[in-house]
Length: 289
Image (cartoon, rainbow, N blue to C red; front, top):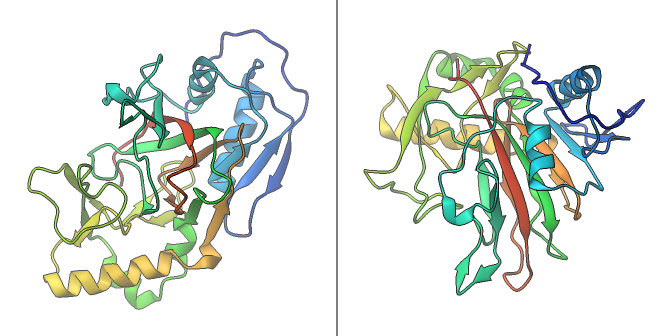
């Protein structure tokens, strides 16, 4: 079971919560919880169970400080420290995702436009378990986040494809400087990279998930280059089918948390003339198995 850390702030605990599925594929809205309030262990466990069942949870209408957001994240595991200080404000675990510019420079990471499907930090030895995004300012149109169910993507593969990828690893690499949001054909030699199983098993649910993605997965180890490329393109197209996807249209005050071990996410394009400001916290995970 995921560790649930104690919450020391003593404010009233909501008596009940309501869960509303967001789509047939994945996602659930949790209603009746103000994340500024004290969350006792029973409520935290209920929210954890909803997260494991639905992969993505949404809480709308929140008014959160950085400390509020981090305190909630800690109920799911230790937050990662941010290593890009130019995109950090007060708390070392909070990073801004924004296209707002000050003195000509973005105040946040990943500022503009479309972003292809990916899984956070899969290019590292220990990827993020979870990512949490809180919306402060959103454009009038676009900038939506798409989530894909990697369990369903694996489970619906033909048996012949499952046999081809069984036991194999794929190399993931991320070129943050020149290809942060859209895949390019080549990755610089110095870009961070790591090989993980093509199919990973969730440490809590025990379900298998397809763990490759269009933005960062470069090759399947042990296969000729052409065969690897063809197989990856087949897997990418399969996992991005609409029946596996929930598209979230953001409102200010939305807080979303997703499980990187069994989901992918992407971003739709939006006007560079409109402001988008989000706060992100990532939660440390474990090496994929």
